[in-house]
Image (cartoon, rainbow, N blue to C red; front, top):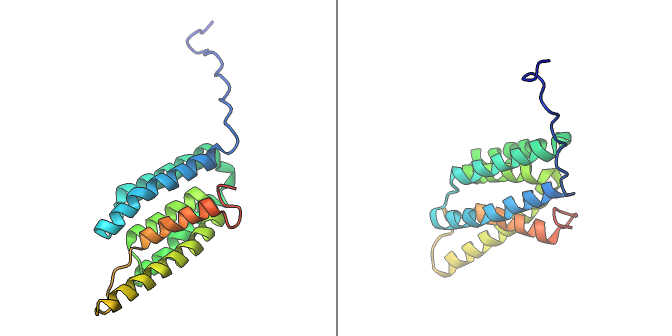
Length: 171
C-alpha cells in the first residue's frame, strides 16, 4: 500500500566476541603508549592529538560495549581527571599527564586505574631517584630537573596490563 514507507526489517546485530571491549581497550592503551613515551622523552610534552584521540576511542568503546557500566568507566575518567588536575595545579605534573590518566580511566575502568596509578607512582619514583642520583654524580643540583611522568604512566599501564596485580585487563 505504501511501499516507500515500509522498509524491510533490519538485520539482527552481529554477535560480538566476549571480551572484545577489553581487547580493544588494551590495544589502544598499548599502542598509544609508544608515541606518548617518544614525545614525553624528546619534547617533554604529550600532544593533544594523542590524548584526545585516545579519549575518543575510549568513548566509542564505552558507547558500543559498556553503556551498562556507567558507574565504572566514566566515573574512573572523572576520578583520574579530578585527582591529576589537582597535581597539575600544584605544578607537579603537566596537562598531558592529566589527560593521559583520564584516558586510561575511561579505557580501563576504576580497578585498572588504581593499578596503573600505583604502578606509575612506583616507576615515577624510580625514575626520579635515578635522575637525582645521575645529577648528583655529575655535580648538578637535582632541583628543577624535569621528570618525564608520562613515561612512568605508560610503564605503569604496561605493568598493570601484563602483570595484572588484581586481575587487570589481561588475566
